[in-house]
Length: 520
Ligand code: NAP
Image (cartoon, rainbow, N blue to C red; front, side, top):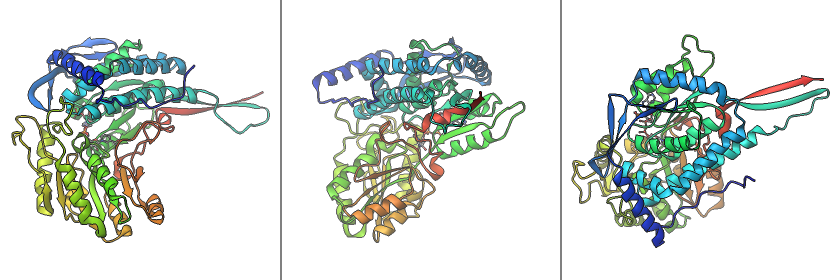
């Protein structure tokens, strides 16, 4: 019997056995660093001449792995394999497809510490953040497997005399899956497994920052016995291989999560029909955010301070849901700012391989340069309260791409660091005249992903429910940490297509509904 979905519990690293297991997993992963990895097309390993090395952001000279890079030729081979595999995979019963996901979840659960260790080493997550990423990946498998079974059952229709009526959710075809590096396991697994369990075949082009963790997941799916060609692993540059596949006439849909710029480009390219194309391509695009926490003068201040610090600096602020603006009622602005700065100063910046580390490095050299530039801009737009530097690490990123948690106060709502996504550990403090003004500021960007409000006033909370225009609104809690099944996730406006990953509507995006009526 398939039991009811439950979220994967987080690991308690204060338990000695868990701490030991994590250290052992880090040792295991360290022993595998620097290996070469092929593409996988139609179940076959394919080596290419062009390689890309994935490196450790805590120690940029350390190579995590060397990955064969696809060119347009391998992309076309992957498309042929996926097109062929679709003809049989679409006929496999949903229950059987779901079992591949149940098995993938079981394998990742057994190897949870190892997967976390890959995330620590390849992208600089601390232990808790890495564990959360793995738990979410497991949740997506468990949740979408059950969802497909639910959708494959009889769907409620209005009876019509003399007819038998039925609605079936059938797959779309070949999908291109393009994940970001910031949840390089969870988001990749979510988009890939949703597509596969719905009966589609997939070309997976991982982020060039994190092909290592993507490869580990590819091998898990292989271990579940997935037929060849259903999932094709195709690392390669987004700008060439990505563009090429987005424009391919055989691509039926694109599931993308990443920046606004790339998402809009994909949407535009996909909209133009190619010679021989039979369908309107579907684009599922989840993009950037500029997320705010709004604090009222009636709020529980200490709880708001905890929520702001956790949301702003978890995984170095590199979450689409990260709080990058604290919008505070004038009456409590000074108190909240003082307490947030105090708490932030206590965060430990250091190697994510150490259990006690709160914040590791940012993801890459380009991230480092871009965040530093925003700190410079922000320091001119407001007052640098704390951070801005690299702590005890080299300021050129040689020791790792470390950036201190940074707070800049006195920011105008229209300032650049209040409007543009920074995607790093930089928090802008903005003073609001009153509650209505605070909500107005919260809605003043082109994004609409997450947001949180802290207030003890029922009328103000109701106003926030009505007016705060975000896909995921949190009340009296932090604005990060959406759970599969609990908080279906997706943003409004330029934050994306509001796909609500981890929700009951999500799989519909990977299917088309066929209505069948037979008159007797
Ligand atoms: P990105 O630069 O947009 O890259 C995302 C993916 O797109 C990568 O795999 C990238 O491949 C690929 N890509 C680049 N150019 C492409 C093209 N022309 N055609 C097809 N694919 C292309 O984003 P990122 O830096 O990885 O991730 C950070 C962004 O993701 C932030 O804006 C963040 O807010 C957003 N995000 C949103 C959500 C959400 O749910 N809304 C969740 C997580 C992250 P290469 O690496 O090879 O360039």
